[in-house]
Image (cartoon, rainbow, N blue to C red; front, top):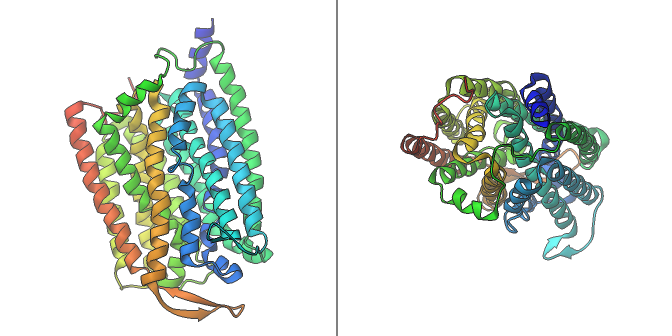
Length: 453
């Protein structure tokens, strides 16, 4: 009877799409807080004297726990051991704790230093590190939720929609944070708004847990599969296809998310966009992904060609950052066109990359596999923003300007960062080519449709 109930729930379109909506909303809240500080680089410099390097250190903290302490790998193992419900709840709580500490740090000035960092920068960084552990753990958990509910069905489409809803959070952060901060006269108010959103996101995830419990019943979470054992990690790390996919992930995202951290400042300094509207252009990137990622995911489900889709995305990534590096057409219209193209790249690669993991790794190990990939990804998401900050402070300052409040702040040249991002794109394309070749050898089925007829 339990088996029949489980089959009915897993095959019910209404049930699985409701689950997707609920968990995607939780990720929407998390992604807003992830990028809520991205448009505030200039304001933090004006209000508290943050340098580009200090801002880079703050972003470096994103991987402090995830990478340095291998917590993402541990999170993946925990996920495969205890399931999506408890892991997801714990992830939401960590996000709330980290966001609160970040809000506290930016809500007022602090005296002194801690471990060589100004107290405010240190506290904000620790808060971001805790939050990062939560959001990344939530990411692998939600991805496994989709694999669990959509395997053999519209899995790539579901993952694409989840990514799209999450990108709405990024869009809101990029476009609304600076106007909110200016309206309230404080960079902390958008973070407080994000904290409230995370609390609502936790409630949404609890709703999912109730639905998932009904589906699960007394049946083991991984139906028709062997229980996960720690020794199974060996079969994951011995897979060449897995490592190529992980390398493609870190190279591609290292040219996307670190760019977004500096995108508002980039638009102000290179294209002369008014600071109050500078977040609108970067928001084009996630807006494009909102519509295109499900489209490309649906194509992958129905037609296949996953490795080819990833190669096309890498080519577009190279083109955009190379054009950004050139001293031509320094007008906001040109920047907007390039952001639209980058939105295509931002949609193509994730729409094929994340649904490809279960084709390479067995389902009972997929949580650990995603944890390992997210761990590799976080190396780039942590180090690259710090590197960009160092490059800007040492090679990118071309002058100073006086703000409306009378503060003197640097004027940055973003040529070198754009070249760095272009190089990541070239390496990502090369990796995608190798992955397609490996797929032909091993028969993973990356070029085959996901929907089983």
